[in-house]
Length: 254
Image 1 (cartoon, one colour):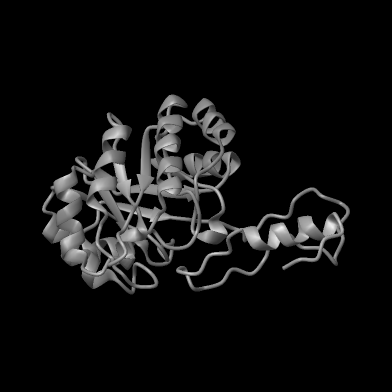
Image 2: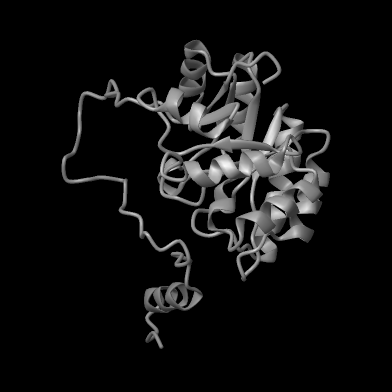
């Protein structure tokens, strides 16, 4: 930042968490849903409510599903619509990321979404961390005019990827912001910034909170385990739906 201070961007999945981040001194929030999948697009109501209550910038995640970052035409259409909705609801920026099947930045589609987002700034999220060649990916994003890239340095956590992050900061040379995120907290943030030269950090900063719910059915949980393989998705199978429909009318399923 121009005054030498490091900006904290808090990754949040609710309006109360966004308000807590602001109260704690965050300079920006990344507003998401479904953090168990790494973050997806929040609802229109969540965006509107956040914008009505926060004074700091709200950057909205544009991600139609969990898993990898190779999107179908239908999913890409959803992303275009979500960018337009985020703009209409007053978002201060959007966060997105698309790769092609070979692990390079999907330049054509990313360019189209960047154009659709303007005049809002764009962050390219941690799809960068599974790109085949980080140097090539960074140069592509510079060429697209993306304002910043969120990265753990292609490592499980940003502290583990600190060497690559420091190199990316030097390679960026002010042409694009490098926003380190994942695994940065109060125990390591000062040393991490000194090590990498980053002027922004992306953090969660969460603590567990019990809700006010008095009754609980211990046999039921709606939090399912997530498969660690991002390239495998649970998708609706038309054949299985058809089989159930046939059974309901007394036909044999085939």
